[in-house]
Length: 271
View 1: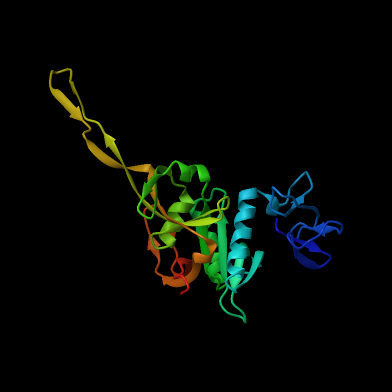
View 2: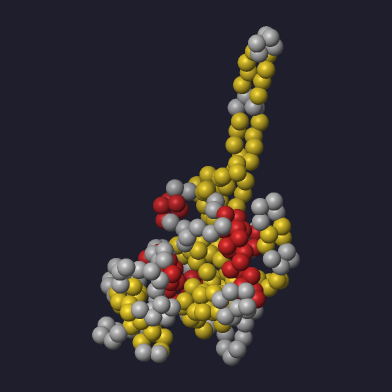
């Protein structure tokens, strides 16, 4: 976690100093402030850990949230990490909440680092929409995945990419694009999913009646794999926020709700 309670006040890990007692804002148990040169400053629960706010947290996820926070603060926006958003469709805790004061539209940034099915990401997005807070969904991308990619003009091609359900959903939600963050390199990539075609080789044989039979000899779209084209890399200073109104979209596997949505865009460089 990046935020804890010191008394009745919220404090971030990069501001906090060791010495005082800190508590988890969710379960109210005592947490430990961890600071070091090799780790993102954070608060950790003491074992045994039963709090849902401590579930699945990784250094990559912590670094991604810090990168997003610092990027938009540098652009003059107000940011809060691990911010609660109250909604009639289920309260949410945004990885990063961004707004421009006073009282303008808030935008939630979610760095998805654990598996989600179609129903889960749909429900979370609807909760944000119900609160009037459009959400941006981002993925984490590993340096080794980028290192093994094929160079393209302006980016890279990752073949046989094992696309996860939430990425398919977010790709449709983002109107045909899905952004990724590399917390190690401190950069962003704009991704587009393409079909991965599999060649089914032709074969022939003879039936018991002596008739020649054949099969294959065609290509088909893979259900498991996609080809991921990523454009970039972009530094944090080049990334901006946009909002748009989208219509409801339905496929054979999932539905994306209509309403106000949000996404990233590449900012024009300053003259």
